[in-house]
Length: 277
Image (cartoon, rainbow, N blue to C red; front, side, top):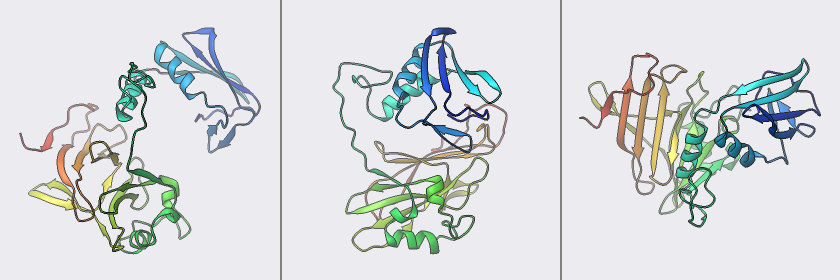
């Protein structure tokens, strides 16, 4: 829970649904920890209970005990159901008993993934760490030499064929709403590392870039997407999707690219750059 209000230690939070005091979920804060305005509640995994209530309710209010008295904060439930459906699809839970929204009679199953979270630079193979730090024109640079930007912004590795891996990693410090990231390919046999070029459409034709912004990897479809925001609202900028097939010596293929220069408040209508109409 992130809030600018100062919660009282040892107090409680009430999640009230549909304006009914009897339809509520209680969250204790006695063992909660607070860092930079974000409260974490270890040992109180009420996520599923709260999410189900959010999906079936029309309204939600959080009642907080603060240093300034009791405060009620309305929480919009717009998009919650669609988000749960997206999670079901992304985790291959559609029509399964363990689905959040799209429940069915199919048996739950373990979803295989090639993706591993990289929590710090110490988790990288030495050859990848050395390349990222010294051969990428400053991708590994933080605020100072002790600043591990992977700990702050995260990274992932993707297992490929022939004992090779892709690493999607931060490339320098982010701006207000854009995180630059680079993709490195690693051959586990030869220990070779290289930057993977990302093809895009320039003003005069095809070209390549060495980094992208705000990327997302779709493991089922082997695609990497990026969204460079022209401003925080996300109504302009560039959206790109690439496809990867193979091992260390493969390259990304440009699947789709949209570019919108006009920041007009419309987040849906984006002109397509590639493929051509």
